Every structure is written in C-alpha cells, then in structure tokens.
Figure 1: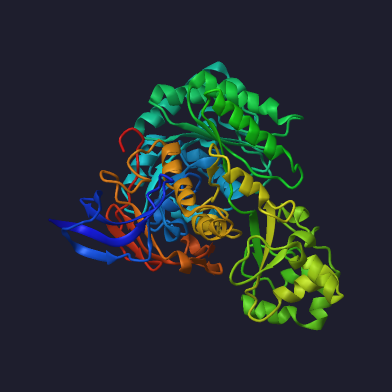
Figure 2: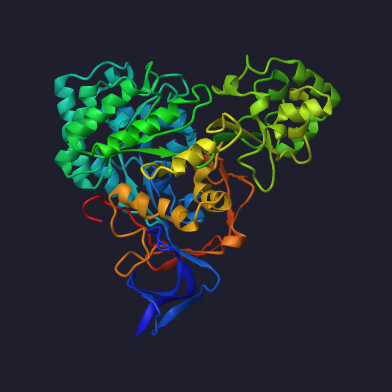
Length: 566
C-alpha cells in the first residue's frame, strides 16, 4: 500500500504516559492509519531512528485572538511543537463587539495582554459583530496550527451592559439572561467555552479594571448555564483569591461548577507575596475532583517573568529623563550613548520610578532580576541576581545593571521572575507536576509580545523537567492527551490508528531554546519577542510537514476548530 507519509523506526511516545516503543507510523488522508511495522511505502518517508515521535502539543492558554486574524503562522507556539491552541482566555477578546465598542476592547487587550493598540487597530479587520461572525472570520484564514476559541466574558459584558460594565456595576436579571443566551449561541456556533477574569492586575493602560472583576456569582452561574444550554464547553477563569481565605472564593467556583455541570479551569501561580496560597488552592482543586467536580488548575512549568532591555518594551531606567532623551536611538547607538560617563552619572542620579509608565516598576527588585544569557536560564540561583553580582563587584546594583545593559550592541536582556520563583527554585511547579489533576499551561502565546516569549513552554518542559527526573512519557502526556481532553478533543493527543496525524519528530539530546530576539513584523511595524528552538526535526499537522528543523515549510493545513463539530 502507498501511504501519504511513513515515519520509520522512531521511539514512539504515544501521549498516554505508557512506556515508549520503537515503531513505524503510517499516515493517510491526514490520519494515522498504522503504528507498528509498516510494510507499505510512503510518498514521503522520514527516517526517525534515534528520534522521538510524539503527538503534536496542545496549548490550552493562549491569546492569538488578534494574531489569528492577520497571521497564518501562529509563532512562537508553532515553532515549539504546538499543533493545537485554545485562545480567548482571561476574559479578553474581540467578540461580540459593536462598532462603538472596538476601542474599548482594544484598550483592554492592550492593557491586559500587552498587545500594542496600533498593532490591533491595523491588524483587525472587524468584519464581525457577533461571536459566531468572529468564528466565521477566523475560518476564512489558513494557518499552520489548529485554533479553538473561548467566548470572552469581558467583551460579552460590554456588549450587553455598555458603560455599566466598565463601571463594574452588577448585571440585572435581564442582562444575565441576555449573556446566558449569547453564551449558548457562541457555543452552538463552535466556541469551546467562555473565559472570565477576577484579578485586579488586569487593567487597561489607563488603569481601568477589567469589566468582569466584580461579576456576581449569579452572573457566573448564568454564564456557565449558557454553556450547558449551547451544548457544552468549559469555563476558564483567573482570580487573585484575595479573600482572607482562598477557600471563600473557591467555594463560589465549586457552586458554579455544581450548578452548571461544566468543567472549570483556573490559573494557578505561586505568588511571591502570598507564598502558601497556591498550595491551598491545589488541595482545594484535588478535593473538588475527589467530590466529582471537574475543577482543574492550570500552572506554569517555569517562572512567569518579564524580559527587560534596550530592545524590549521597558528597562529599569526607561523612566529616567536623561534616558528618555536617547530612547529614540537604535539599541546599539543608545548603548554607546549610555556609556558616556556624563550621561551615565545623570541617569543613575535620577528617579527611576517617578517618570515611568510601567505599572510593574515597583514590583521589580535587584535581588529578583538576573542577566538573561545564552542559553537562556529560567531558574538562575540567587547568587546570579544583579544584587548579588553587584555586591561581589563592590558596586551598587543599579550601576551593575546599567553597565550590563549598556554593553556591546545593547541587546542584553534582564530576566525578572514575577511568580513561581519565591524561594529561587521551581519547587512550586514541580509540586504541581506531581498532581495529575493539574494542567501544564499559561504560555500566553501571542500576548505580552514586548516582555515575554513563553510560547516556548513545551520545549522547556521536555528539556528541563526530563533532566530533573520526570519521565519523557509523562511530560509528553501532560502536553498532549491531557490538554486535548481538557479542551474536549478526542481526535488528537495520542499516536494511534484513527487519530489525527499531528506529530513531532524530536532529537531529545539536541533539544534547546534559542536566545529571544526582537522582531518588527507585526502590523503597523509593531515589535515582538520571538524565541526559536532546536531539536525539532519535523512538526506534522494533519499529515503535512509544517516545520523542518524549525523552519516553516509554507504548508498551512491548520484550521479553526468548532466544538461539537471537530
């Protein structure tokens, strides 16, 4: 028999967590048709001897809501083995939306997910108003991966309540009923669920809170009930859990899950200011699962942090008046100007905070910032902090930091972990990885484009955690069948006959992360951080090779997924 593609002799890590085995994989018509000894030949054959053959990765927390409208290549996720992504998380997105509310939703996305307003103004076609029309617009574009979308509660609330949503007023019974009906309509059209945000850190650049911050329990139950009435789907949420006891807020989540019967995913991070709260939430989610409630935490496999530098959106000296005088220069020219002794002395004498427009500036400390080298180090020891290195050099931390940024061509980065690194270890992430109810995620692919490039999570997971004793089989399962089932997808995530032919061929001993670089390829000339990978010999989507050795082939077999139809 002649197959479309045959992968020969690879070590199949099938996505179920069971031990790997050597086998051929035959693909026909976009599906896996045989795993074992394949006697037939392929129109194309790939020699995978000595390589891993895994399912394509499924990322359940991304923000490609804008990029998916204008871009067929959903990088960085697609260059790190991701073949399916779920977007629309954290309650932000672009549908439903009346023409008069477009600026509001752009401002919210710009503030919450750090996607520049000019990029969104230029890139979004706005050929929709309703959420079903938004899905139709997405469906018209070919891509290198599959995408599914959640209905964002923030956009929904503004659409139904107008200014009252922005003023954080309670929804009326009639408004809750309308949101419930529109949620059912979105799910019936193919939404994978809905998302909401209850965190004070989600604000517009003007400082306005996300419209869903104070949504009442009755409104959340109405949202979840709309999912059930539309045919299913999940509710994704983020919260600060800032009640005196996290169990109080978690009890609301339990009641929403019990009333609607819908799965709930919530973001779980180990905060640096409340170092024990994550443990209680992890226990509460395990308890809920034991009681038959489908409530699962989604956690980051490494610190969530920001990259600061002259080529980035911000650096520790961006607010200084004498730095602003040279901020327009190219990074290399700016670095040279910074090395001038007179300017150096002026910048170091100025207030870094007073003139800053960076809301996180007060959360940064020299003891929790690190030079970000090559290869990138996401778990640096305390002695590598800027403070520790400055102390050993006998200078002030701000002087050491300034000189590091001003070196060479001005492309040095600083790494500032904001969560999951309170004790300078990744112990919190390791503990979550030992809980089968917890899900690896929070890559935020497509968001925070000037500060992070965490779409590289899948590569990091295989590299770092395998070297720390986790089996490659379990690490693959956590990013394939586990995340696919959490989305409600049963046709992918496992290497087996009848499954979708979404695959990665990986040289594990060559797997690596490249140093992030700044690209200027977004609409309106916008810039974004991009982090490449090494070790992916091929990524295959629906039986078609989309990437070879990290380079796009130009094939675009990905599509919009509609829940209940795909």
